[in-house]
Image (cartoon, rainbow, N blue to C red; front, side, top):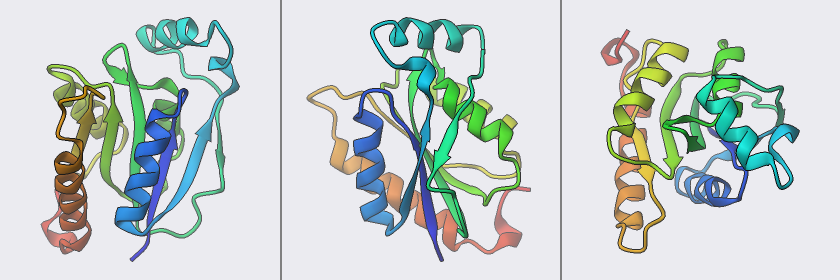
Length: 164
């Protein structure tokens, strides 16, 4: 069973999480890139586009290739998945099922919003979610281990038991 980590990271924080998950799940990484959010004004454009749901052009490299499952890793911008990740989920509907979504910089009530976004873009799966805030007192290792365990449970469940 192969797992592909699909990651978008503007600052490197989500990329580091994707690398941790790739090691834990023995999966490869495909990175979403988007030139729109680079440079000194990238942060402002990202916030604006997220608020108004403007989805940018993206590239994904290396290609997803054959995989049984995807795990999505992205930052949160204005309480939503980063716009390049939303573009990926909407534009690539014929990909393997999403076994989990991990985000950086989460806040209160965020997981419900993300669950709705993921369900709308990729219906049919009750997807495990992980939100890391980056705060020093956060139990990152424990949260990461629990998320990996939840992803493995999804991956091992018979198709007949998955949410349809």
